[in-house]
Length: 303
Image (cartoon, rainbow, N blue to C red; front, side, top):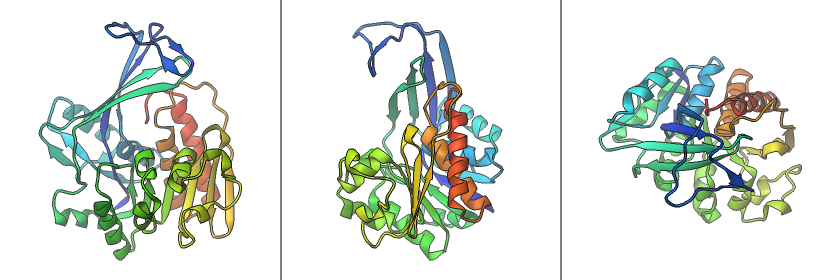
């Protein structure tokens, strides 16, 4: 039995950092035909599914991941990373000609530009009986999977509801830009929805500047949406909304920002850990999420 099964991407992250990667404002200055020699290179494991699963194990939970791993030169590296972090890969699918790679350019201040490639694939499970794996967890996390059809994700959540297994759902910007009525059947079946503030503004079709996150904002989604909503807002902190309460957690100080990659996944992992270990204590879950996010920001790599 696992505390958490994380459903999502597993990627190889390649980091490049050096003085030759100059930037102006918020853009790197890269010339067509240019060649750049960097001072530092790092190779780590990434992907929303892997990051949250690893974060959970770092806090003492027993976790597994459901994701796709390619039968290629990166497979031994991925499996070693998962094993080193005590994350089970027993439910993963293996595919020929599949790759997920991110090349990440780091600025001296820790901001990054990500160039991502993923072989197109559109399914979480290869076989219907794979659903049975989900019964082996206390909680399921479903990361940002915009290429997986909404109906398939709704089907997964409906199954979890029928088994009384709580689900934590994360959306990315592509799903949030869909018409709200398309994603409402999905979010209404989750027990916890976690998004960042700009994703939330896209989801409810309101300008970010017009939203007062210190007030109850679930009403912007739908009056029937009563699940726990968590909104992260970068340096401004994070908010949670449950019942009639609004919870706020300030962003904790960072000694030195090294790499912002995976900060959101780290917050999510910490929140889930707190929620499972502290019997649904929202305030403590937010605190653990903020603490772990800082740890990730102060080093290279998402986990």
